[in-house]
Length: 84
Image (tube, helix red, strand yellow):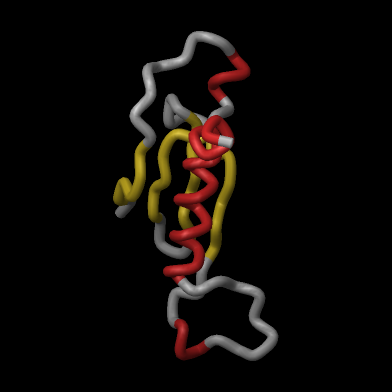
């Protein structure tokens, strides 16, 4: 059910602060889960509408593509911030 979408290639961390750095994104039924480097702690959930044709005008849920892009960017943040 859960497919690995994106994984940052980093060595395992030894400190607690580094454990909270995003490391992977998994797709579940209606959301993408950004997990820490060890894959144990969920850091963020990006929910999406499973049936986009049923979206209401006031719906606050993302499309699947939008949620996937946001989750991937969230997982890449540590590397993107280092480049700045």
